[in-house]
Structures are given as C-alpha cells and as structure tokens.
Picture 1: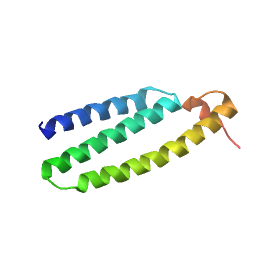
Picture 2: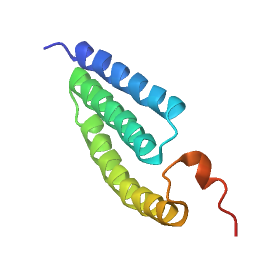
Picture 3: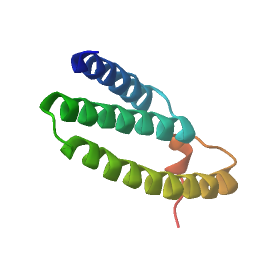
Length: 99
C-alpha cells in the first residue's frame, strides 16, 4: 500500500481532532480530540519514516506516545478535581475557579 494514503488519513484525523477542539467545550472530549491529533501526527511520522526507509519517525512516534500517556494521566487528574469542585466537566466553568 502506498504511504501517501496514510498521510491522507493522518490529515483527515488531524482535521477531525482540530475541529473537535475548536467546537466542543467538554473537557473529556477536548482531551480525546487532542489525543486524536497526536495519533494523527504519529501516523504521519511513521508514514514518512516508511517513505524514506529509516526508523527516525517511528522513534519519534514512540516518544510522542510516552508524552501523550503522561498528558492523559495529568489531564484526567485535573478534570476529576474540577468535576468534584464544580460538578461539571465544561471548560467554560473551569475558568471560574479562582483562589
């Protein structure tokens, strides 16, 4: 299969994720869309790696997955804390929290 098709798929997934970040206001859906965008970038890295015949893109994709896993842990902890305080997972309500 041609790696260009994977790049088209990565562009489509990134566009869907970016639209979700810009349109939706729920924090959990926002994080899912960010993860979709990161996965689209990983797919593009691996496709370019395959296209050029080296492993650099796959190594970068691995490190991106490690950072994304750490982001999920911290992000979900923040969402749970905000949900306990406000009983809402809306991003607009989170800006009202002031000390």
